[in-house]
Length: 213
Ligand code: AP5
Image (cartoon, rainbow, N blue to C red; front, side):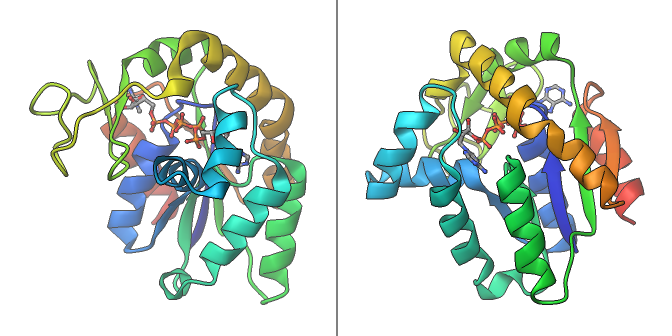
């Protein structure tokens, strides 16, 4: 099964994508996580990506497409995947459609997690991320067992540089301009499904399972 998660920054795409991946035994591919891992390791890609990410802007399509096409070549993608944060622009969506069509394949579901802008800034300021294993928490809605320590790998949790309110506002405006149009793109492809992301995260997951099963 090939699934795309759509939605504003902080809508809960990553939270849901991890659960979908575990449930269906498919990889969770987050371009944001891949960029952050490269930044942590100080790779050339990481250095370039950081310049854009810290300003709340998108990393250029050329860099992103090369990275993701390499990732699709991994053997673990044979039975599908859940894409989180990709595609994010029209050229990315078109490149994905073409790469799949060349193999006689297509996306099965594009799930749009809907959360209004007013809730996003509040959510992001409470998010804490583990830059080692990619786990995500919220100080109020999904707190780790031990304050500021990752339940999964024991590393210290951080507020992401791009989760500061001024950067979140920039990311939201970039989202509306460049990524939101993909909702219509996937509606036209007949694969768009919508879920209410303002609900409790377990209820959001139940709604997604009802779509996928
Ligand atoms: P990326 O990491 O993809 O960030 P994003 O899309 O902005 O999404 P987030 O990870 O911020 O949020 P999310 O929707 O996954 O929410 P989460 O589940 O964590 O990208 C970062 C940057 O990388 C981009 O700005 C760009 O520069 C670059 N980039 C990445 N991909 C790119 C691409 N394809 N092209 C170009 N550039 C790219 O949840 C948020 C918080 O809310 C958490 O604390 C969570 O616990 C909490 N929460 C989740 N669900 C609920 C709920 N139902 N109720 C209450 N709290 C909830």
